[in-house]
Length: 380
Ligand code: UDP
Image (cartoon, rainbow, N blue to C red):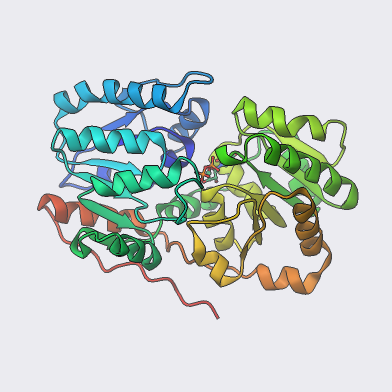
């Protein structure tokens, strides 16, 4: 039983759900909590997944505790009725923490996809760092994307035999989707693709950046629009009104800023592929952009994804307005600097993580054997 609730979870579990459906040894049951609503439905639609159960927990402005309580009470009867052989959760949302505890309380083994990511700071990202540590404590099979994430789990005394390094399924999803070359439904994006102008792609949503920091992001974007008139700044705006109210007022009337609704995954990956620079506080985008050879500036002070930072294609720049302007301008105007950050690297996956996940689940349930682990191709 796969339980998930938000857009990034849906993108990363979709290749595994598909692989479970194709396996002869396992049956698939899917449960969505609906922690995100439209953005989640959008991804399910693209991957052709029709959830078997929908808890529909979304409510505007609800607290994390109200959300957790709804997930617990909604899931318990489904776990009792279906009695799955194992529960699969992905990542670090409140859905994941609640679902993994709910399964554990019913003595159902938990499989954690994207296990072992750690920033080392319980307050940042908040509440994700705590969510993934809590989940790790009740997990029977840790599907770690990289050897760095395995090392994090070993440091927490997790049994090595319960960890499999499989790569990140986001790369499976990305390769599958980019190959399909989705058409842009927004004509402004099609015009952008036709014009072949430089593009600064921006996404922002992190809870710990809400408020002053996000206002600063809005001001920085407005200054960049003026300083870099040759660039088009594209911001697919997150659905959360707190994000929109902080950023969008700063961008009104700027002709080279294009604000869109959240893009369907196919269109987003196509936009990523044609972008020049990526500015983001997203986890998934930090993993996807390097494999498309795009330099990424991350608006956070730390990251649980150090691999691409070490490879030199991702740079942590924080949320200071001045720093954002300086760092983007440096990439846009210094070709040597740009060149040094735009090598294509794949520290996160090779497109076969879902197969390894299903094989490892087979080992847990006594129906199969693990595949060789993921090892990234060394970067020059
Ligand atoms: N994404 C998308 N449409 C958008 C923006 C992002 O499909 O308009 C995808 C993106 O490719 C990545 C995921 O959503 O796979 C990232 O989601 P988000 O930034 O919301 O969450 P995080 O990865 O930070 O948990």
